[in-house]
Length: 157
Image (cartoon, rainbow, N blue to C red):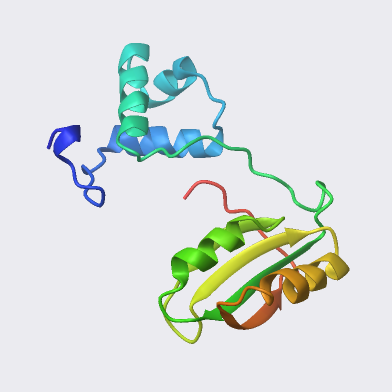
């Protein structure tokens, strides 16, 4: 299906070379096209074209660094679950995006509505974030904070 005829939720299936390219770029977003080409055994021109197509198709949404939060001065991490007013997701999401240390926001099903991952300097900063910023959002009915004791970065999936 041509790119301009794709709907936002439909994607073209990835072939094994595309999958290998994604794994390499997830492990090292700074990998050169030449390095990627060599590792997946294709020409540089082919690697360049495939990476560009993956970006244009929205499969690759961007390139980023994986951060060791503790070494970056963010020694406290927590998952915060939120129950929110029905149909307030877009409003709540916009407010959560503005929070310092917000790393991941997901609308989920189950006993709560939103799952938020945050990284803060310490537990005091985490408490302030929850009590003065998150619970002050009018659409937030309740929160529950789950402290992260240890994390393991699994790298590329």
